[in-house]
Amino acid sequence: MTLISRREALLRSGTGFGSLALADLMINESNAEVGKMDPLAPKKSHYPSKAKHVVHLFMNGGPSQVDTFDPKPMLDKYHGKPLPDANLRTERKTGAAMRSPFKFKKHGQSGIEVSELFENTAMHVDDMCIIRSMHADVPNHEPSLMLMNCGDGRLPRPSFGSWVTYGLGSENKNLPGFVVMCPGGYPIVTTQNWRSSFLPGVFQGTYLDTKNSDPEKLVAFIRNSEMPIARQRKQLDLVQLLNDQNLASRNFDPQLESRIRSFELAFRMQSEATDVFDLTKETKSIRELYGDTTNGRQLLYTRRLIEKGVRFIQVWSGAGQPWDNHDSLEKQHKKLAGDWDKPIAAFLLDLKQRGLFDSTLVLWGGEFGRTPVAEMPGLSGRDHNHYGFTCWLAGGGVKGGTVVGSTDEFGFKAEQNPVHVHDLHATMLHLLGMDHEKLTYRYAGRDFRLTDVHGNLVKEIIA
Image (tube, rainbow, N blue to C red; front, top):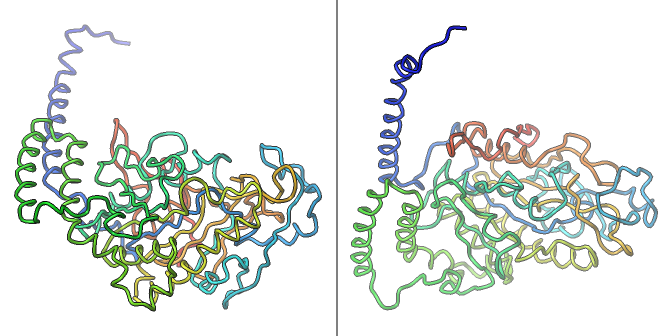
């Protein structure tokens, strides 16, 4: 091995210092350019696609797959008895097999079996792809919510909606590109579910508490009753001028940039948000189709937001974990499904009638499922189950009337064609025209993506 002196080492590597300086200058120039552009302007996808919008119907808490979209007749045979396979159990103490209290029936030309809980939704089964082999990492709400929403159960990563709006922008500059609706307050782990993390703040979700039906309460401070629009514009222009100077002096700090853009968006929303959330402008027949309920209003808001060009809309069951039925499952699931069934069916029908179905990708599901065995004690509820659960997709580019994968004969674990959450994300991005391996953002010296280093396309989902 040939040894070199410190002087010679410096001479050989000296040009590298110039490269470091150049890189810093280029970053500054790049940041300056980003500061001039609208990050929510529509962007081209990696390749052509049908889907342009995403609607995520989040049944937080974990709906039971064996009581909704994954019938298991063997549970009738073993009801009240231990399962024959000791491996079919969770890390927690659980009891005997518990049959579903709900009847399943075949629907549509595809003949897919759906529980009586979703009899109205089942009218659209020929347009749905039901994934019965979903699986996640752990049986706990917090990390499973983070995995489903952000692609990681532990680390602070951008949410799915943030990645989509970062990749595609939005089609309406007067409304947020990513809207989150959850009645009664925040769900568990709160705003982490729709955070932008290290992506610019403009891509984070905008939360609405949909327990309010009055547009003025739904979007707080949507109107300025003391100052006309023209005067507000002059005031904001002055603030913008001062903020731009401050932004330049701070090397185009992304957090400050996001704050400035939020002011502009709030101003522009005055002209459009009050209109989109005013359901009195809908016909009586449409309002009756959806129903005058919280979920009916949420999904009617959703259709109106899609018409306005909003890219990603997430609709939650409610604060807390509504579907987390460790006991009284029959009563609770019946009520919850009853609140959702008619509005979902109305929403899918409305999308079809307005020519929006093919351009809208709809996802239904929770963060995990529930066990086929009963929660201790008694036979009234089910525990968490991440080993196997169900979700369904409909709309833009989805192969309708299909079932992907299966769980074992009792509905505990994904066996045939297992689909991890990373695979679901990769496939949904593909349906939106984006390659999940190319949709990246450089942060802390490395390229990040929604699926991290995982994710495979599930081709059976794609039409």
